[in-house]
Image (cartoon, rainbow, N blue to C red; front, top):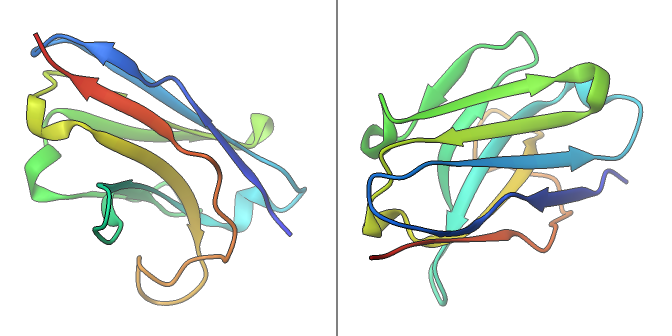
Length: 120
């Protein structure tokens, strides 16, 4: 079973930047399509950005041009560079691997997430 450990969150002022990291266990990380997700209390998780095993990326409309997802298969790690942050980006962020055709069809394995708070 793949496990995920997210890090890099914190408190940042509007307009600031953060770089999130997600370290995955297991030797087959490179074959997975990976995604970053956000979740507010009591609400479903939403896709923020995804990257396929072939490094094709896609983004939620709200973050296009500001966020960049990347991966380092040698380190079993996926990153999310977050620039020009806005208060509405505040949430807990998680990573996971897609196991089906939908970016919401994910492995049943969730890390603790990393809190991103954008506030002045």
